[in-house]
Image (cartoon, rainbow, N blue to C red; front, side, top):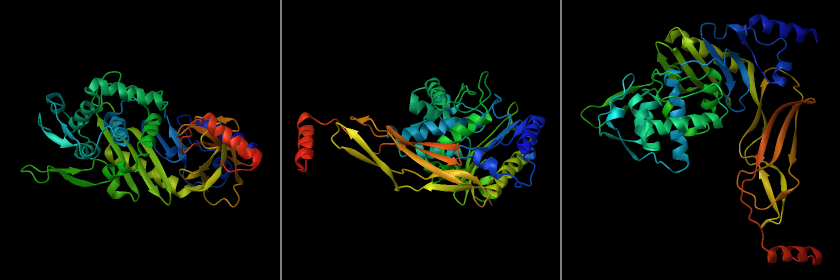
Length: 397
């Protein structure tokens, strides 16, 4: 109890920064660490560090301050592109023509000419690696018909993700009034973008070419140098304007732990990269993922009333993990599964039918929704009649 009071008092003294870990990590942190967490990002205006799988915040500093994000804005642009590809509304091989407006963008660009065509795949390279403002607008117009329409999609997606510190005015992060977000919200959209595993094929490349077989090949060098110099780093997006200073949302993965680190308002590139690297080092040194279930493992059965199928087998559709402190002999992690008992047909794919609750002792530390992997249509009268009589007379239906 005394230690908890002292820890709370120290956080109040720190004021501008804190380590926010789950209850189970908090219990395990006695005697751990070494590095003063308040020094993880001393020069950044704001920062946050979390694990991408569960979203557990390990460290934050002014993480909800509303600040200009510069080209980190393009994380949302890439998210909407990947979403369009995933839903089949767009193919990576589709041609995208640059409008005169798109080609007129200043700042970082891939120097699109009005009327020039590139594939979605090439545009993504230009956005992810070279931070192309022109490529971002060209993609916005391709998806929504106009940049204004695309910006509405960006703000709608931000609201859907619960990004309460965010308002977008454009798709590329060029300076604009009322265009802002926070380190916290950047981490949220970064986690969402990382759900599309192919994105790191773009954000994790250090160098490549556009127009490779043309008379004017364009050499791409990733603005995020950590993908070359930090082991495990494979994204995501840098940003700089004179107002925003030096910003970065970065991700790195080691030994099954993927982290997201965001810094905003760093004074220079070197400091920005150092502080992100320091956050990564801390996460990988201090934490690991504890597996609860692996993909494909059976979690239970859900009975369905009046359905074409009478039950659904629920399997883990992903890794169910929790973040734990390294070196703890017995973290006392346990879990419980609760399935809905009154599920009636029809059941849609993705419908929540239960939950997986993870505890440390008696304290809830993480909860996962369990969803139906299949659609179950409502059964007709004859199907239900045969099922009922089959039970009465032990006949297969």
